[in-house]
Image (cartoon, rainbow, N blue to C red; front, side, top):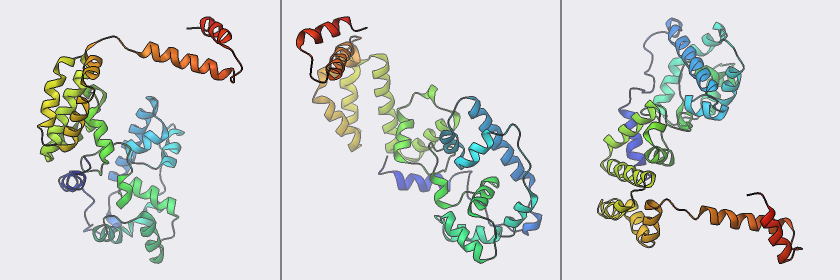
Length: 287
């Protein structure tokens, strides 16, 4: 996943329908605000759904690409308030400059842009600029890569996050996350093979199909993907135990649980208890 990171980021980003906004060809004064109002209302509605499902502020911010303070404010609101038209106008006159800077420096930091706009006469605070860009659904440089899970095709993704998608059950993923998996598989032959192997391994673990383990190891070692081959080779070092874990319904969990209980009781006595007292406490302890 890490080796494919740079290539996939570029492919997904360039082929996405969620491209960075194009330079404006019309004057800022005639920019339609109805579209931005629609974006804001849509975000508010999505946030309320996630809030009702019990998601945290941090989780909602990551999924919707919003600032946590904005999420917190929206969660406390029963209805979406009207935004000041003056605030929008104050930023709209700088749209041509913002679009030009986004083209010149795709990884532009928001704070850098804010300092540049101040030199041009922009009087809004840093947080005002940040919220206004969120309002217009404009993502500046590094800010676009802060999502906990990639929510749009073409968003920057982290290898660790994509790996989580590959090992998750499909019924646990949303429509957008499933589309992300399909996009990654279609852009990389290695990731297509990796996903097939990961899904087969997950099925073995879930459905106790230990008799298929040897065949899976052979497939992984012959896949040409060195990370999967190394993992499969490592399984051979304790093959029988792993096969039993994937085949048998028995577990050493109860044994480990009793060992942990004994250690806990012993520590509670701070080394002052003899064997007889420890035995009595263990026997009488609730199971």
